[in-house]
Length: 450
Image (cartoon, rainbow, N blue to C red; front, side, top):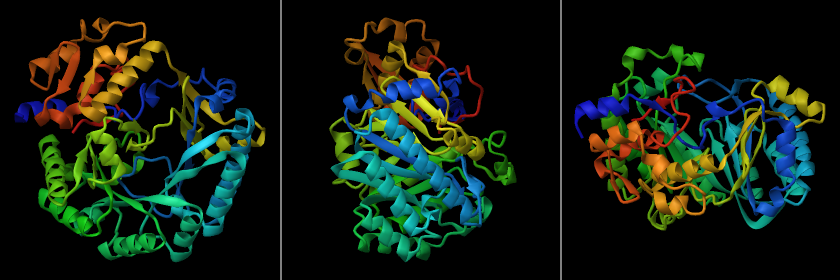
């Protein structure tokens, strides 16, 4: 792939496509009443996933793009968890109190900022409000720097079987540039503690495109991380959006790599992980061959949601907490972001829905096409449109963006099957954007494609 094409598509700011449409299309016209109405039918749609957002950290990492609040005190966290328990009751009541739960995911922020007894109480509330399947999976995002033994015990006692640890980079120069100092030894201790407690699946998050990051530092980070043998890796490109996340202004933009350098870093990370025995899954995940994520990729059952690539096959996701996004068969619902407003709505006994989006049949078709492209690097347009009431012509005819991708050798089309060329797979988000009816109509706060 030529440097010109890497620059052309790598510098393009496009969504990560963890949903379609993306949150930029959400509207305040969809609120608590619409959410409650759709929750009333959710149990009949099969088992659901539950996402709980814990928007607190002990310190700010300069690269962070999450909705989080910095607190050194425990009281704000405890108060927030009390409010979240009330939200659980509101959602459970609206849904009829008999919703089967298959997966639970705690994200943030830093969910492990909770005290062990607080985590246990929150899990107890969930189990009393919903009907957990016998083998329901529970995942928690963890900051290894603050994980303590009592919290590890609480995780194990409450059925946590998956943990995702933020690593980003082991290079001390890069760590200083993003204000996140984390030693290999801290990470090693966290992994050992989780393993001894019976947590069966561990994921590491790595990031490329960070300030002062080099190809060599990426190689060294992967080699160290692979020594700890997590089942999975998620590898993300740093999204520099200082207009949206003001703390990112603390990062020296001159120290950030360009599109070509970002691509080199991404590819060398992939090469090193594959040398270490990991299989490349989709755009940016890696897994050991016997991991469920790898099996799903081989079976073409891989899915994509707000946590990235997943084996979660539920059609509904209940989002709990400030800023949390839920997905129902009818569309998406997002809670208020400000903590005060979120708590205020719940105090009035109202679901804290700020905005959302109700899907049309065309949206659902485009979502299926984009998900298959993101997961499989190809999509059978005829198969995906079957029964939708649409033929495939409107997806490809007069699609200038798709035509340009074809002319540049990024994709090929044979009949109704579109395939992303192997050497251009890192540009798959740019390909997905060709099927996004809303792309370029909601500003430019997305991350770079490579």
